[in-house]
Length: 315
Length: 181
Image (cartoon, rainbow over all chains, first blue to last red):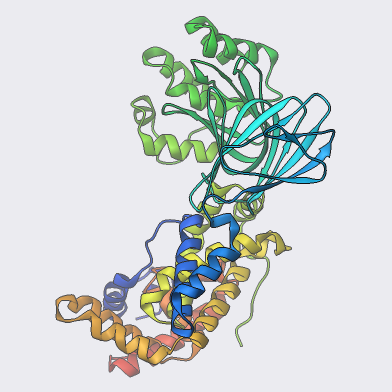
């Protein structure tokens, strides 16, 4: 008997190796990828537990919690002036200030500011902007952009940093992006790196690097598109998303779509049905084959795992 | 000494590394899927089994944080293996390894006979020289083939094959199994 089976499972199986595989295989690793936030918390908890053997646990935990302001619920965020005279509440500041939960930072037409978002990144606040701190804690950091423009750069686990707007919530999946909201509540999200999920009432739009997504009050996020997408596609998509453009708008989108626009089309799969869904699928496949394991029948019935698989491949 | 090759990651893996480094957590998740068994095997070869799963998560979190320091995305596998080995060493320094292991075995109990058998067998594998036990664990516990082990860890296929054959020979002797004809 050769060692072929031991090497690559070819050749005649070695019964002893098979037995070892069977028995030892019960110890095989099969966990999903770590939720980075949870893993970090587990590690912190373990260290606190070990520290408890070394010193008084309560004292150590207290000291650690004091030394980690980003995980202390209720902590205020540092804000620094960049230009003009931004205000926290009604108080203009020169230099720096604190933005507490429930407080608003406002800039006029000439002022700008930077918010240090706990220890996970920063938010640049442009002129004519009103933004408030809704929550900050171990599980979530949440801002509310009432109107204006911000640029966020976040180094945090996915879904930890959120920005509410009047018509959608931008959920960070590890990225840098700008978000603009006018005084009617309409907005646009534009991503420069990573992913952002733009969400409202179960409707999710995944916006990738070099793509953007519009949102409208009463409707929510539209369909994301590449910033360099053809004008015809962008116009038709606007009509489809916000003006009940229906089949006519959809067909214009399909006619104008390039291969790189397949992620736009991926979103449309679950936003149309019947023959129209088949047309969207056929257009996507005409651009490139779906990944292994993704079938026409599965996509047409909106099989969740197949949709996710295809989305990942399109990334 | 086993020889190593570099780079070892495929172009796709290198792309995933670059995307993960840019903040793409889906790419990070895919890297986890590709390399988690390698990391687990390395940790199992060096530390308590009960801690290995959590330590895998620690290693990936640590890797994500250090990813920007990786100069050549093509060497991700061997770089990650070093992090895993170091993490296992750190853990061993801080914990009383022997007591942990005995505790593991005691907790398995008669109702977990198959798990107890696996852990007894693992204990024997862990008595082998380091190069052999790591490679054998990747093959027999994690189910990776020799070519996969070479691709992921950065070892040459020749070294992996030698480690597998010599390690298996020693394991057979320790377990009292007949050798290959």
